[in-house]
Amino acid sequence: MSPKNVIFKKMAKDKSVGVYMAKRDFVDRVDSVDPVDGVILVAPEVLKGKKAFVQLSCTFRYGREDMDVMGIAFRREIYIAIRQVYPPIQDREQSTHTKMQGKLLRKLGDNAFPFFFEFPDNLPCSVGLQPGPNDSGKQCVVEFEVKAFSAESQEAKVRKRSTVHLMIRKLQYAPENSGTAPSVKTTREFVMSDKPLHLEASLDKEIYYHGEPINVCVNVTNSSNKNVKNIIVSVDQVATVVLYSNDSYVRAVALEESGDAVAAGASLKKVYTLTPLLVCNRERRGIALDGKLKHEDTNLASSSIVKEGVLKEVLGILVSYRVMVKLIIGGIMGSSEVGVELPLTLMHPKPDLVRESELEEEMVFEEFKRSYLKGMADDEEEGNVSTGDTAS
Image 1 (cartoon, rainbow, N blue to C red):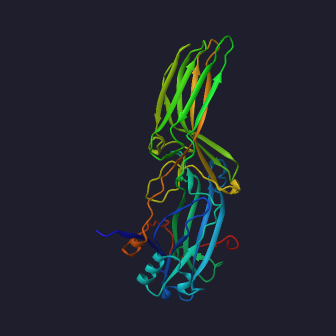
Image 2 (image 1 turned 45 degrees about the vertical axis):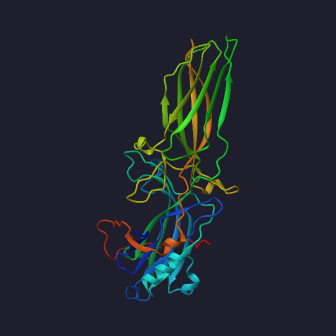
Image 3 (image 1 turned 180 degrees about the horizontal axis):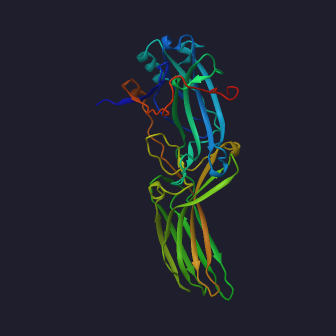
Protein backbone atom coordinates (compact mmCIF):
# COMPACT_ATOMS: atom_id res chain seq x y z
CA MET A 1 0.00 0.00 0.00
CA SER A 2 1.21 3.52 -0.74
CA PRO A 3 1.80 5.84 2.24
CA LYS A 4 -1.01 8.19 3.21
CA ASN A 5 -0.85 11.67 4.69
CA VAL A 6 -3.43 12.19 7.43
CA ILE A 7 -5.01 15.63 7.28
CA PHE A 8 -6.81 16.75 10.43
CA LYS A 9 -9.91 18.84 9.81
CA LYS A 10 -12.53 20.54 11.91
CA MET A 11 -15.50 22.68 10.86
CA ALA A 12 -17.35 25.38 12.76
CA LYS A 13 -20.85 24.36 13.73
CA ASP A 14 -22.36 26.90 11.32
CA LYS A 15 -19.98 25.72 8.53
CA SER A 16 -18.66 29.26 7.99
CA VAL A 17 -15.03 28.24 8.49
CA GLY A 18 -13.07 25.00 8.67
CA VAL A 19 -9.45 24.24 9.49
CA TYR A 20 -7.22 21.66 7.75
CA MET A 21 -3.78 20.81 9.19
CA ALA A 22 -1.26 18.10 8.35
CA LYS A 23 0.04 17.75 11.92
CA ARG A 24 -0.74 18.59 15.52
CA ASP A 25 2.77 18.28 17.01
CA PHE A 26 5.36 20.99 16.38
CA VAL A 27 9.01 20.53 17.30
CA ASP A 28 11.07 23.03 19.29
CA ARG A 29 14.73 22.67 18.28
CA VAL A 30 15.83 25.30 20.85
CA ASP A 31 17.13 27.70 18.16
CA SER A 32 14.06 27.33 15.94
CA VAL A 33 10.53 25.93 16.08
CA ASP A 34 8.46 24.24 13.39
CA PRO A 35 6.10 26.80 11.83
CA VAL A 36 2.37 26.24 12.22
CA ASP A 37 0.69 26.05 8.84
CA GLY A 38 -2.56 24.87 7.36
CA VAL A 39 -5.53 25.88 5.25
CA ILE A 40 -8.80 27.60 6.12
CA LEU A 41 -11.90 26.68 4.10
CA VAL A 42 -14.58 29.37 4.06
CA ALA A 43 -18.20 29.38 2.94
CA PRO A 44 -18.90 32.86 1.49
CA GLU A 45 -22.65 32.19 1.39
CA VAL A 46 -22.58 31.62 5.18
CA LEU A 47 -20.15 34.44 5.95
CA LYS A 48 -22.43 36.99 4.25
CA GLY A 49 -19.77 39.69 4.17
CA LYS A 50 -18.03 38.75 7.42
CA LYS A 51 -14.29 38.17 7.56
CA ALA A 52 -12.45 34.99 8.53
CA PHE A 53 -9.49 34.97 10.91
CA VAL A 54 -7.08 32.41 12.34
CA GLN A 55 -5.35 32.76 15.71
CA LEU A 56 -2.37 31.00 17.32
CA SER A 57 -2.13 31.31 21.09
CA CYS A 58 -0.08 30.00 24.00
CA THR A 59 -1.92 30.13 27.32
CA PHE A 60 -0.78 29.44 30.87
CA ARG A 61 -3.50 28.42 33.32
CA TYR A 62 -2.80 27.94 36.99
CA GLY A 63 -5.98 26.53 38.51
CA ARG A 64 -4.68 25.73 41.98
CA GLU A 65 -7.48 25.40 44.50
CA ASP A 66 -6.25 28.20 46.76
CA MET A 67 -6.20 30.58 43.77
CA ASP A 68 -9.62 29.66 42.44
CA VAL A 69 -11.52 32.32 44.39
CA MET A 70 -15.14 32.93 43.37
CA GLY A 71 -14.54 30.78 40.29
CA ILE A 72 -11.69 32.94 38.99
CA ALA A 73 -8.50 31.03 38.15
CA PHE A 74 -5.19 32.54 37.11
CA ARG A 75 -4.85 32.69 33.32
CA ARG A 76 -2.30 34.45 31.17
CA GLU A 77 -1.92 34.70 27.42
CA ILE A 78 1.82 34.18 26.94
CA TYR A 79 1.58 34.66 23.17
CA ILE A 80 -1.15 35.50 20.71
CA ALA A 81 -1.06 36.21 16.96
CA ILE A 82 -4.01 36.72 14.59
CA ARG A 83 -4.12 36.66 10.79
CA GLN A 84 -6.96 37.64 8.47
CA VAL A 85 -7.37 34.89 5.89
CA TYR A 86 -10.56 36.02 4.15
CA PRO A 87 -10.89 38.27 2.28
CA PRO A 88 -7.22 37.45 1.59
CA ILE A 89 -4.67 40.22 2.11
CA GLN A 90 -2.10 38.51 -0.15
CA ASP A 91 -2.70 36.31 -3.15
CA ARG A 92 -2.64 32.58 -2.55
CA GLU A 93 0.74 31.98 -4.12
CA GLN A 94 2.47 34.53 -1.88
CA SER A 95 0.74 33.09 1.20
CA THR A 96 1.52 29.44 0.44
CA HIS A 97 4.66 28.31 2.28
CA THR A 98 4.62 24.50 2.12
CA LYS A 99 3.96 21.76 -0.42
CA MET A 100 1.22 20.34 1.78
CA GLN A 101 -0.61 23.68 1.72
CA GLY A 102 -0.35 23.76 -2.04
CA LYS A 103 -1.77 20.28 -2.34
CA LEU A 104 -4.63 21.09 0.06
CA LEU A 105 -5.48 24.25 -1.89
CA ARG A 106 -5.73 22.25 -5.11
CA LYS A 107 -7.90 19.66 -3.37
CA LEU A 108 -10.26 22.07 -1.57
CA GLY A 109 -10.80 24.63 -4.33
CA ASP A 110 -11.17 28.37 -4.64
CA ASN A 111 -12.65 28.96 -1.17
CA ALA A 112 -9.56 27.60 0.61
CA PHE A 113 -6.86 29.95 1.89
CA PRO A 114 -3.48 29.20 3.51
CA PHE A 115 -2.26 30.40 6.91
CA PHE A 116 1.24 30.39 8.39
CA PHE A 117 2.64 31.30 11.82
CA GLU A 118 6.23 31.31 13.02
CA PHE A 119 6.71 30.60 16.72
CA PRO A 120 9.07 32.83 18.65
CA ASP A 121 11.81 30.66 20.16
CA ASN A 122 11.21 31.78 23.75
CA LEU A 123 7.88 30.04 24.37
CA PRO A 124 7.40 27.11 26.75
CA CYS A 125 6.59 23.61 25.59
CA SER A 126 3.22 21.93 26.12
CA VAL A 127 3.23 20.62 29.68
CA GLY A 128 0.79 20.30 32.56
CA LEU A 129 0.70 19.14 36.17
CA GLN A 130 -1.48 16.08 36.73
CA PRO A 131 -4.44 16.92 38.98
CA GLY A 132 -5.31 14.66 41.87
CA PRO A 133 -8.28 12.25 41.74
CA ASN A 134 -10.54 14.86 43.41
CA ASP A 135 -9.23 17.92 41.54
CA SER A 136 -11.84 17.92 38.79
CA GLY A 137 -11.49 21.00 36.58
CA LYS A 138 -8.42 22.30 38.41
CA GLN A 139 -5.13 22.17 36.56
CA CYS A 140 -1.85 23.91 35.94
CA VAL A 141 -1.03 23.73 32.25
CA VAL A 142 0.67 25.38 29.27
CA GLU A 143 -1.54 24.98 26.18
CA PHE A 144 -1.28 25.89 22.49
CA GLU A 145 -4.34 26.40 20.33
CA VAL A 146 -5.20 27.24 16.74
CA LYS A 147 -8.55 29.00 16.52
CA ALA A 148 -10.42 29.98 13.36
CA PHE A 149 -13.49 32.23 13.48
CA SER A 150 -15.69 34.46 11.39
CA ALA A 151 -16.70 37.93 12.54
CA GLU A 152 -17.33 41.48 11.33
CA SER A 153 -13.84 42.41 12.52
CA GLN A 154 -11.00 41.12 14.69
CA GLU A 155 -12.37 42.97 17.74
CA ALA A 156 -16.04 42.10 17.22
CA LYS A 157 -17.93 39.57 19.30
CA VAL A 158 -17.76 36.05 17.95
CA ARG A 159 -20.47 33.41 18.09
CA LYS A 160 -19.29 30.08 19.44
CA ARG A 161 -20.95 28.28 16.53
CA SER A 162 -18.75 30.36 14.17
CA THR A 163 -15.54 29.29 15.92
CA VAL A 164 -13.22 26.29 15.57
CA HIS A 165 -10.76 25.36 18.35
CA LEU A 166 -7.86 22.96 17.66
CA MET A 167 -5.41 22.01 20.38
CA ILE A 168 -1.84 21.51 19.17
CA ARG A 169 1.40 20.69 20.98
CA LYS A 170 4.88 22.18 21.04
CA LEU A 171 7.39 19.45 21.89
CA GLN A 172 11.12 18.96 22.25
CA TYR A 173 13.06 15.85 21.28
CA ALA A 174 16.33 14.56 22.64
CA PRO A 175 19.44 16.14 21.12
CA GLU A 176 21.51 13.87 18.91
CA ASN A 177 24.72 14.42 20.86
CA SER A 178 24.67 13.17 24.43
CA GLY A 179 26.89 14.65 27.12
CA THR A 180 29.19 12.83 29.51
CA ALA A 181 27.61 10.05 31.56
CA PRO A 182 26.95 11.49 35.06
CA SER A 183 29.10 10.25 37.93
CA VAL A 184 29.43 11.47 41.51
CA LYS A 185 31.20 10.42 44.68
CA THR A 186 31.22 11.49 48.31
CA THR A 187 33.03 10.59 51.52
CA ARG A 188 31.49 10.75 54.99
CA GLU A 189 33.45 10.67 58.22
CA PHE A 190 31.79 9.83 61.51
CA VAL A 191 32.55 10.70 65.11
CA MET A 192 34.17 7.79 66.93
CA SER A 193 35.20 6.15 63.65
CA ASP A 194 38.81 6.14 62.44
CA LYS A 195 37.95 5.49 58.79
CA PRO A 196 35.28 6.98 56.47
CA LEU A 197 32.50 5.66 54.27
CA HIS A 198 32.83 6.14 50.50
CA LEU A 199 29.81 6.29 48.15
CA GLU A 200 30.09 6.46 44.39
CA ALA A 201 27.20 6.41 41.90
CA SER A 202 27.10 6.65 38.11
CA LEU A 203 24.78 6.30 35.12
CA ASP A 204 25.71 4.65 31.84
CA LYS A 205 24.67 7.72 29.83
CA GLU A 206 23.14 11.20 30.19
CA ILE A 207 20.03 10.99 27.95
CA TYR A 208 17.29 8.39 28.39
CA TYR A 209 14.12 7.92 26.35
CA HIS A 210 10.66 7.60 27.88
CA GLY A 211 10.08 3.97 28.89
CA GLU A 212 13.78 3.10 28.83
CA PRO A 213 15.32 1.44 31.94
CA ILE A 214 17.81 3.61 33.85
CA ASN A 215 20.77 1.67 35.24
CA VAL A 216 22.31 3.19 38.37
CA CYS A 217 25.66 1.75 39.42
CA VAL A 218 26.19 2.14 43.18
CA ASN A 219 29.55 1.42 44.82
CA VAL A 220 29.80 1.55 48.63
CA THR A 221 33.06 1.08 50.50
CA ASN A 222 32.21 1.15 54.19
CA SER A 223 35.50 1.44 56.07
CA SER A 224 33.73 3.05 59.02
CA ASN A 225 32.37 1.36 62.12
CA LYS A 226 28.79 2.26 61.14
CA ASN A 227 26.30 -0.07 59.46
CA VAL A 228 24.41 0.85 56.30
CA LYS A 229 20.87 -0.44 56.96
CA ASN A 230 19.27 0.31 53.61
CA ILE A 231 20.00 1.73 50.15
CA ILE A 232 17.24 3.79 48.49
CA VAL A 233 17.48 4.73 44.82
CA SER A 234 14.93 7.00 43.13
CA VAL A 235 14.34 8.95 39.93
CA ASP A 236 12.94 12.34 40.93
CA GLN A 237 11.00 14.70 38.71
CA VAL A 238 11.38 18.40 39.55
CA ALA A 239 8.67 20.63 38.04
CA THR A 240 9.08 24.35 38.70
CA VAL A 241 6.20 26.72 37.94
CA VAL A 242 8.39 29.68 37.00
CA LEU A 243 5.70 31.92 35.51
CA TYR A 244 3.69 32.40 38.67
CA SER A 245 5.68 31.92 41.85
CA ASN A 246 8.59 29.50 41.40
CA ASP A 247 6.66 26.75 43.18
CA SER A 248 8.56 23.48 42.82
CA TYR A 249 7.01 20.02 42.84
CA VAL A 250 9.51 17.22 43.54
CA ARG A 251 8.11 13.73 42.99
CA ALA A 252 9.87 10.36 42.96
CA VAL A 253 8.52 8.86 39.72
CA ALA A 254 10.48 5.60 40.20
CA LEU A 255 11.68 4.25 43.54
CA GLU A 256 13.50 1.23 44.88
CA GLU A 257 13.99 0.68 48.61
CA SER A 258 16.39 -2.20 48.18
CA GLY A 259 16.83 -3.31 51.77
CA ASP A 260 20.51 -3.87 50.93
CA ALA A 261 22.82 -3.57 53.96
CA VAL A 262 26.54 -2.91 54.09
CA ALA A 263 28.12 -3.86 57.41
CA ALA A 264 31.04 -1.99 58.97
CA GLY A 265 34.21 -2.89 57.12
CA ALA A 266 32.33 -4.35 54.12
CA SER A 267 31.67 -3.10 50.59
CA LEU A 268 28.96 -3.45 47.94
CA LYS A 269 28.79 -2.81 44.23
CA LYS A 270 25.43 -3.19 42.55
CA VAL A 271 23.44 -1.92 39.57
CA TYR A 272 19.87 -0.82 40.34
CA THR A 273 17.44 -0.55 37.43
CA LEU A 274 14.53 1.90 37.55
CA THR A 275 12.02 2.76 34.82
CA PRO A 276 9.98 5.96 35.36
CA LEU A 277 6.54 5.50 33.77
CA LEU A 278 3.28 7.43 33.90
CA VAL A 279 1.32 4.19 34.37
CA CYS A 280 2.90 3.88 37.82
CA ASN A 281 2.03 7.49 38.74
CA ARG A 282 -1.54 7.88 37.42
CA GLU A 283 -3.16 8.96 40.70
CA ARG A 284 -0.42 11.26 41.95
CA ARG A 285 -1.14 14.97 42.08
CA GLY A 286 1.51 17.36 40.76
CA ILE A 287 3.29 14.98 38.37
CA ALA A 288 4.29 16.95 35.24
CA LEU A 289 3.08 15.46 31.94
CA ASP A 290 3.84 16.26 28.33
CA GLY A 291 1.04 18.20 26.66
CA LYS A 292 -2.01 16.09 25.94
CA LEU A 293 -4.36 16.11 22.99
CA LYS A 294 -7.95 15.07 23.68
CA HIS A 295 -8.70 11.37 23.33
CA GLU A 296 -4.98 10.54 23.32
CA ASP A 297 -2.69 9.37 26.07
CA THR A 298 0.51 11.10 27.10
CA ASN A 299 3.60 10.41 29.21
CA LEU A 300 5.75 11.91 31.94
CA ALA A 301 6.92 15.37 30.94
CA SER A 302 10.14 15.61 29.00
CA SER A 303 13.14 17.49 30.36
CA SER A 304 13.09 21.17 29.45
CA ILE A 305 15.92 22.41 27.23
CA VAL A 306 16.08 26.20 27.41
CA LYS A 307 17.79 28.45 24.90
CA GLU A 308 20.58 30.48 26.45
CA GLY A 309 19.54 34.02 27.28
CA VAL A 310 15.79 33.34 27.37
CA LEU A 311 13.99 34.67 30.45
CA LYS A 312 12.87 31.62 32.37
CA GLU A 313 9.95 33.55 33.86
CA VAL A 314 8.01 33.29 30.59
CA LEU A 315 8.52 29.57 30.20
CA GLY A 316 5.58 28.44 32.33
CA ILE A 317 6.71 25.12 33.77
CA LEU A 318 10.30 23.86 33.67
CA VAL A 319 10.95 20.13 34.14
CA SER A 320 14.15 18.32 35.10
CA TYR A 321 15.08 14.86 36.39
CA ARG A 322 17.67 13.52 38.81
CA VAL A 323 18.65 10.19 40.31
CA MET A 324 18.98 10.19 44.10
CA VAL A 325 20.99 7.53 45.94
CA LYS A 326 20.58 7.48 49.73
CA LEU A 327 22.34 5.30 52.28
CA ILE A 328 20.47 4.94 55.58
CA ILE A 329 23.08 4.73 58.34
CA GLY A 330 22.23 3.11 61.66
CA GLY A 331 23.33 4.68 64.95
CA ILE A 332 22.66 4.76 68.68
CA MET A 333 21.04 8.21 68.43
CA GLY A 334 18.93 7.25 65.42
CA SER A 335 19.40 6.92 61.69
CA SER A 336 21.22 9.37 59.41
CA GLU A 337 21.61 9.64 55.64
CA VAL A 338 24.45 9.84 53.16
CA GLY A 339 23.27 10.76 49.67
CA VAL A 340 24.32 11.83 46.18
CA GLU A 341 22.45 13.29 43.20
CA LEU A 342 22.90 12.57 39.47
CA PRO A 343 21.22 14.77 36.82
CA LEU A 344 19.76 13.11 33.74
CA THR A 345 17.72 14.04 30.67
CA LEU A 346 14.46 12.20 29.90
CA MET A 347 12.94 12.83 26.47
CA HIS A 348 11.54 11.28 23.30
CA PRO A 349 13.92 10.26 20.52
CA LYS A 350 13.74 12.41 17.41
CA PRO A 351 11.20 10.81 15.03
CA ASP A 352 12.00 9.95 11.44
CA LEU A 353 11.40 12.88 9.11
CA VAL A 354 8.63 12.63 6.53
CA ARG A 355 10.15 12.29 3.09
CA GLU A 356 9.29 15.03 0.61
CA SER A 357 8.14 12.34 -1.85
CA GLU A 358 5.42 11.28 0.56
CA LEU A 359 3.75 14.64 0.12
CA GLU A 360 2.59 13.49 -3.28
CA GLU A 361 0.82 10.43 -1.88
CA GLU A 362 -2.85 10.09 -1.04
CA MET A 363 -4.33 12.36 1.63
CA VAL A 364 -6.71 10.94 4.25
CA PHE A 365 -8.96 13.40 6.09
CA GLU A 366 -9.63 12.77 9.78
CA GLU A 367 -12.16 14.69 11.83
CA PHE A 368 -11.04 16.35 15.05
CA LYS A 369 -13.14 15.22 18.01
CA ARG A 370 -15.63 17.94 18.86
CA SER A 371 -17.57 18.54 22.05
CA TYR A 372 -19.99 21.41 22.48
CA LEU A 373 -21.25 22.80 25.75
CA LYS A 374 -24.50 21.17 26.74
CA GLY A 375 -27.47 23.46 26.40
CA MET A 376 -25.59 26.06 24.36
CA ALA A 377 -27.99 27.99 22.18
CA ASP A 378 -27.06 28.30 18.52
CA ASP A 379 -27.00 32.07 18.70
CA GLU A 380 -25.02 32.27 21.95
CA GLU A 381 -22.17 34.74 21.72
CA GLU A 382 -18.91 35.07 23.55
CA GLY A 383 -16.59 37.98 24.18
CA ASN A 384 -13.74 39.35 22.10
CA VAL A 385 -11.29 36.81 20.79
CA SER A 386 -8.26 38.95 21.57
CA THR A 387 -7.23 40.76 24.70
CA GLY A 388 -4.73 43.12 23.16
CA ASP A 389 -2.78 43.98 20.07
CA THR A 390 -1.72 41.24 17.70
CA ALA A 391 1.72 39.91 18.61
CA SER A 392 4.35 39.90 15.91
